Length: 87
View 1 (spheres, rainbow, N blue to C red):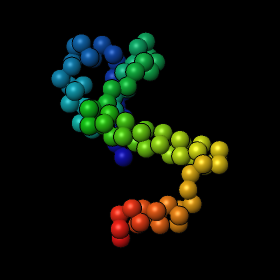
View 2: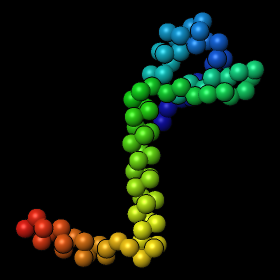
View 3: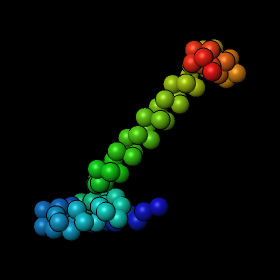
View 4: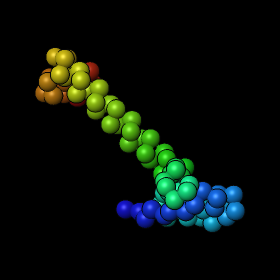
């Protein structure tokens, strides 16, 4: 897991390089007037989060399709894949 750091939003202007360095250790929560205002993450973390979100959305679509009576039985789908791939 990673450590979440909390910094005032003014640190973006006054200490940007430090904030940027902090992103290597995990997300940085920016506060405004003592309350959470936003969260910064590294581009690598962002890419991982977006990939994970895409998987979750795909699973949700699949579950909705199954609930609506769609989709294939796993054995039938595997059999069709084998036939298509000639294995």
